[in-house]
Length: 256
Image 1 (tube, rainbow, N blue to C red):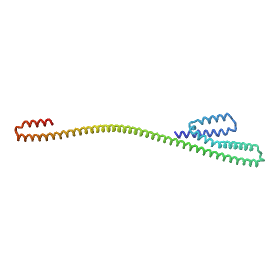
Image 2 (cartoon, one colour):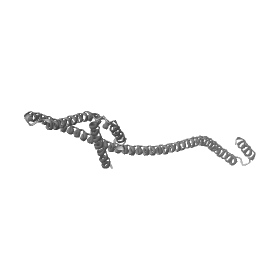
Image 3 (spheres, rainbow, N blue to C red):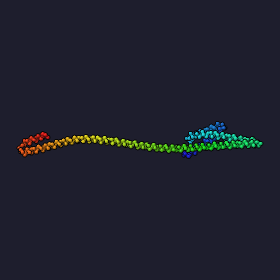
Image 4 (tube, one colour):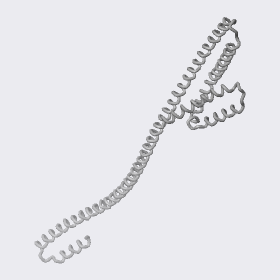
């Protein structure tokens, strides 16, 4: 596709060059109709897609080539005038003035060669500008390709960044949920710990009460043993002291 575009651009440039040369040739004839047609053709060519994409470069090159075209047209006019004068002199001069005619002919031929050399140099300069124009067009095409590559790379990078951001958001959401669950578990464990501490306090109080009860029961048991021992001794010494035994039992029951 780029090759076809370059071929089309080359053809358009050739047409524009030929139109410029034609415009320079007919400028001295002052034919307004031909000049109008050339202007319309230039306008039609300037809006072609191949040309319109490089308007700035074409304008710069056209401005640079304008003096060369004017000089070419001037040289062509001078050459045509000199050739016309030479033909007229060859027709009108008599053999007696052959020497003068030859000198003038030699002078005209020298001038003609000089003008032709100038014309060739102008054409070479024009070809050089044309070559630079083609190089600039190639640079522009390469730059367009590079821009497309960079655009594709940036697009891929943006897509990667977007995917990474989405993955990051998912991970952040998951971590937040896990932290909330861990916080709930910590609060639940703290509540259970506080409940266990309260239960331990209650059990401690109950245990101390039980210890006090056991101590009291031990004291009572020790007292019963002492009383029973005393009673047995009393019974051994005085078998008929039943009344005292009942009295002691009653006293113990009251203490209990």
